[in-house]
Length: 196
Ligand SMILES: Nc1nc2c(c(=O)[nH]1)N[C@H]1C(S)=C(S)[C@@H](COP(=O)(O)O)O[C@H]1N2
Ligand SMILES: [Mo]
Image 1: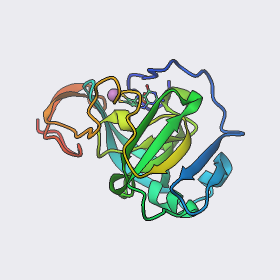
Image 2: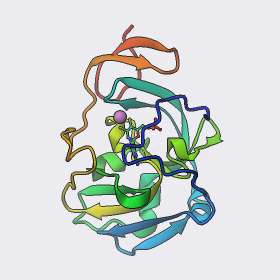
Image 3: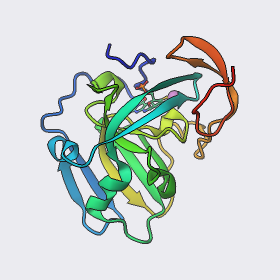
Image 4: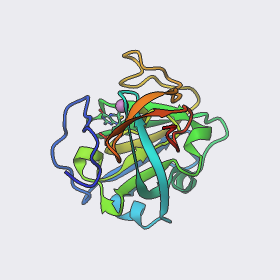
């Protein structure tokens, strides 16, 4: 287990060890120029750190320094066509997918992440590269991503077709703070603070 001590979620089944070497992410759909980037090309792009929380609808939240490429910087490589309104993420094996609005994808703390607290992400936690989107419930933060596709509508993904709301707005409730191992109340919205 790495630094990220959260429950390990692989609804589609754990993929086993995944190697950064040979990893590729396809940027496609409503882009100006479809492009496939290797792991090495991704980490060569400007790096951003987001000190923020991943918060699961299943009742926990973890704070850390997520390192990676801003999705806005990544999408600039392919160019966003004006018709695009949503971004779909596809995980390794293409069973787990999810989709978020383009405006949320372009916010500064939405990353294609490859580090947590300075350590490379291992496959348990979505390595070599995963989405980190602190603004919405964790099921939008697809792990071990192989494709990012711009769309002109939302495409229901793995959990959305099983009843999770597509909006994924974080609601006020009690949640386990993984960092302090305490149950605490959150206000809802993007989780930055706990109330008690
Ligand atoms: N491919 C894939 N990505 C996924 C999931 C999953 O089951 N498979 N679970 C999601 C959910 S519900 C949450 S809360 C976070 C959990 O991240 P973690 O497993 O790194 O703790 O990953 C999200 N991304
Ligand atoms: Mo979750």
